[in-house]
Image (cartoon, rainbow, N blue to C red; front, side):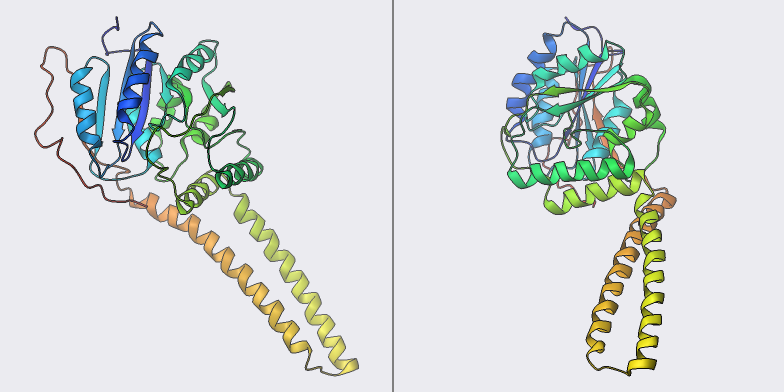
Length: 336
């Protein structure tokens, strides 16, 4: 029997975006897996502006298990990591678990993360034993893992796997941050004193399709790299100095050649090629600088990172109620 939800040992935070097809399967495996742990827990679902009937299904599940279920409803779509941070702010457990709703990470693995946390670690990441993604996503993810580690010095073996455990001390520190663009596992790694990783199973999606397009993955990695390192800017500063040196040498060579050998018409095309190369490098550098400036602009506006419409939760001594209108299908606004 679970203790009251005032201070559960475990909080499981699950972002939800258009997951109506797989929620029943998630409930059927998640609750029994947590009940078997024999400790107090709560599950915090964060609806990230779903456009389908996910809200109605979550509300029905809240009615069925109000003792351990809470539902945070956004007024729009703010992204997976903002949903996780909102779940962290609402959660009350000593051990926080993040889990995707698609069942690619089996809920039965939660017990292994909790056991590792009890050994004294404050952050437990996970590595998929055998990924069940399409080939391009697997290879692209591995390549970005290597690049990201070199740039940010954040050692996360499998950055795309959201099944992770966080200590209360880590979550409290993250709750103090007000970053508009962030990557939760990397942010937690910065604060962790004693992090570790374990190997977990990985399954195919129970239903639906991945919510991350190629563009979304690129944007996510821009947030990760630019949010945790100045190396890209420093790299382009060094490249700028190197290209300036090479350009000066080239001008000197062309000047000497013109004085002693005369002008050659064929050299015009070489100069065009060099000019276009330099222009490409300059434009890419300006775009990179724009990424940093854009993040500064978003930060200094100090707008709320997300807006919570309501929270479905059972209050001591009060009946279980779902506010009127909550279960109606809502159309979430996309926030890129």
